[in-house]
Image (tube, rainbow, N blue to C red; front, top):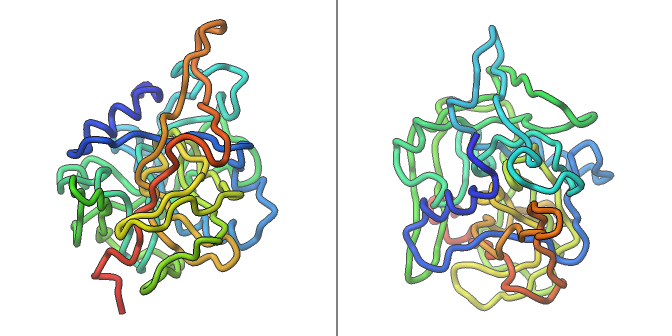
Length: 285
């Protein structure tokens, strides 16, 4: 399993434009496992999000696949950090916008070769307690069959990929904005796979910058692996955009000789960039 500290570097190597950096915790760490969330809407939205997991991390076992993975602690994160002992396998996140249509970040899927090398896995989550191992039913695992539309533009920093899955899912596509732009006062929640972890729901964030044509900025608690995550209006559950880049994830604790999440005040550090979903013309009605 690739060292999770280096996931940021791995995604950097996927990106073709300068300035791509990763993510961080703003204020309090608001990340929750799905089973911990008290918000029924957010838990429902989580069912339509998926993890991008390399095929070589999925071991076939009858009608299921075993997810082969390490833990954050094993990858150099301090043992007392949140989620340090949880499994980590996802390289990116994605979400449904049609029965067989999935959105993610453009730097996560650059070519059909990337499609073929990875699977999109639903139910990679701790739904009733923290799991020590994951066995995922084959019906919850999908392949990418086509890249319908993709942008990774150095000048605009527009970053998205719309892909077609190998078959329709039995999950509800998410509702998304088709015109206009997010309110400056909107409250935000992100659902995805920070540092490759099982699904995390993280709310308590807001819009920090809303002037750029292609993306807005937020103070969402996100990490490498969250790239491609859906960013929602907390109250309505409507998708406003795709989490694509942000502040550095982890910093070295020289005393403990391990890495800890970087902490920023809510209005400090660079902020997290969210591609506007209205950029994607194939989704406009």
